[in-house]
Length: 168
Image (cartoon, rainbow, N blue to C red; front, top):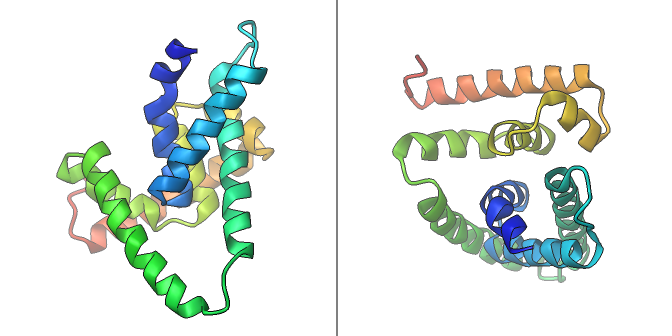
């Protein structure tokens, strides 16, 4: 279990944080993910890494759904406070994980993508999964994943060009 944790914690952290953009939620989700792995995952499981990603993804979406359903009546005040706290947390995480200026720019561009495209690129480039594996994980056709990757890259390129980032 320790080897599993050491091998995948950082990449799972980056993936989950990319989905929910909240440091505390990310930490809670990863804690629960590895707890589930400890309880349910057998050493003989064929693809532990993909299993961890799927569990973390499902926990993340469930947490975001719960959070969305529990928004208090004074919604605007809370959301404004939450947004500023989220930005502060995002800056802290970015400073810890992505230290170079180039990676920060790329991360900012990645966060501007819609959820599905961002998730696919996170899985492909930060998770190292093939498009075929991503298609299986997300229950999409490989062609759909290929198209989403193409469109996401095109959006990233446009954003980076607007920010005067040298893409060559």
